[in-house]
Length: 171
View (tube, rainbow, N blue to C red):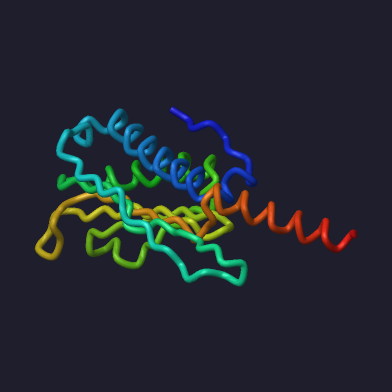
């Protein structure tokens, strides 16, 4: 299931970008559940995260960001599973707006796999896989965050204010 493409202008809005990130993460989780029957479980834990409000800018409007969006499932996977999930992660996110995909191999010898996908603006989704061993609780998790953006209503007001200033300067 691929998500409808959003324009860059639409993604400047907090509500649109937030929904797009939710949909992208949910779509990837659903795709994994189809590919790996072991992950097709009702035991996924979901956290919609929280919204943080930034300090007002010079025009009096406040940007918002969303942090702590996550899916988590306690499940025992194998090295081969982690490699397959990496390929699916790379394919899924390379075709999304989070197209800067990386793999951090530093702790793979400890059974910890970490993949990340980010956008040029700074939004990001991480996938962590912990394989069973004496140091890890076996699990797979996705976490995401959205950088600060204006809400649609604030952006409309901001544009109105700029138009009024422009009209006043012409007169």
